[in-house]
Amino acid sequence: MSEASPRFAGRIQRADLIAIAVLLGLTAIAAWNRFVYDAWLTRHDLLTFFLPWMGYLGERLRDFDIPGWDPYLFSGHPFAGDPESGWMFLPAMLAFPFFGAITALKVMIVLQLIVAGTTTYWLGRLLGLGAVASLIAAVIFEFGQFLQYVTYCCTVRGFVAMWLPLALIGVELAFRATRWRDRVAPWFLTGFAISQMFAGWMGQGVVVALLVIAAWVGYRSLLSPPQGGWDVQTRLVQGVTTGVATVVLGVALGAAGIFLRLNVNAQTNLAGGDYERLGQPHAANPLTIEPLILYIFGSGYTSRAVALGGAALVLTMIAPFLAGRCFGIPYFLGLTLVVYTLMLDTTPLHELFYLIPRFQTLHEHSPHQISTVVAIGPAMLSGAAVEAIRRWRGRWWVLALLIVPMAVIVLVGRWLSDIGRWLGWEVYIAAALVTALLILAIALPVLWRNAAVLRLANLLPALILVVAFLQPTGVEIAGSISGNPPDETYRQFFRPD
Image 1 (cartoon, rainbow, N blue to C red):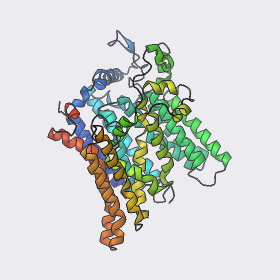
Image 2: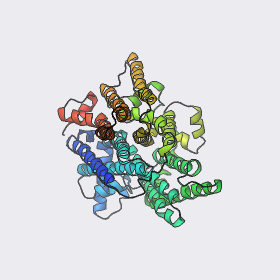
Image 3: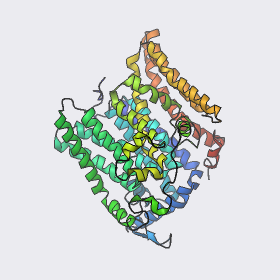
Image 4: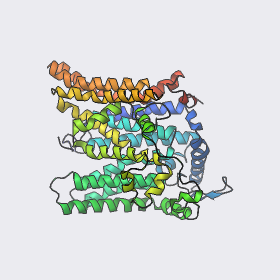
């Protein structure tokens, strides 16, 4: 099975139109829920920082004025020079000049969701996933951790994470181009994504995102080039030119924000990202194994910014065995494992990354923030697992393999319950449903060889898509409407206020 399926060579097909329509429909449902049940706006980051600051950004842009200075806070302070002001961040600059602050923030979130979902779908199709599998990847990415970033917590994570699929797409298209001049537009695509990451979270966020992009450049040029027959010299030239070109273009496109912020930062007690000058080098300690496992496998508000959900847990664990090296599996699996490891206390892997200038200082200040870049890994692994399931029809030994993820979830849940923690019933239900659907997808076409059963088997991935959306997003929406969310912490955020 090749990484680039001949079924998709850049053409928009009927299946793509249906898939995008479904994705936009689900986005509309989630957006409606966040628009109506909007007490999440009272979370301190949003209420005290992003709403007033980006509201001021919109006011100045409406008057065709570059907001260099804000006279209203801290007896006046540099505004555009602040790394989280929204200056040069396109979704904010498109929304806040045209709406009141509260409405504009909601519009910005819709734009973020659309970009995150549609570009993940595009990336999946580009790497050879079918329409349904790409849609599953997009749903898991858009409505998993990312939805939490943009509507409850960790807002700047969303400012970076939304551009990762687009950045990877640009690199992929550049390597697939056969002529140098055809690589310029893809370079600009990745460069634009990089410029937006700088505008969204200059510091730890953009540093780890650039490492993710660099790793993709290295993987696709050196280890798994999309065009066969490249010799070592060609691989090196392709990797270096694409890597350098995209970063240079990213800095150039974002220069109006980047250099202004570097200038302001140099005059503060955080110059160069040196937190020692604050007397507070660490804002958060590294995680231990117990909370990390709970965050990844759990549900509810506490773990929502890291948790995968029952469907993604099963699909992510099974993907390397079903898909092998297809669809970029080694890269996305490596990305997922590396990021989760770096959330823990110091390991040999940490020491390797600490060789990167400034990485240790930025990372140790808040190690869990590196989860900003992890969600694309499980999303693409999940899509790959669904796409690969057809090739295993009739191989009965695979059925035993398919129950392993569910067994792992049960064992993890038992271990956590012994120490007074609970995964959440919805995780078990979603994981069990997806496991059953995967087993049926393999067994049905063999047990009953007729057209009707084959059509039914082909519909099973669509049911996996439903489960992936319902847990956690559907459960949250139902909880907001009923007023009885599964996690009581959500009650304060799920009010039409």
